[in-house]
Length: 94
Image (tube, rainbow, N blue to C red; front, top):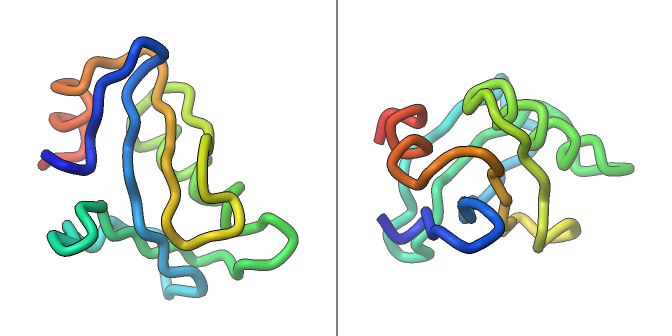
């Protein structure tokens, strides 16, 4: 899958965020961008959406998650530590 990449530091998860949604949810895969589409309820002000993205994926995956690229963009790269790429795929249900 294009949106999951294994690195020496952990697994990179490439996402496209839609803020101000009704609820937090994974929408599917954006094949054109090669990213996982994610809806986040928080607005994109004062880092609220970024905090919600990290919280959502940490809880969903049961692992440490941080944003490594795209803090001010809808396209973000997340670093997941402590899981393999296969385990991330399994926990995402993809």
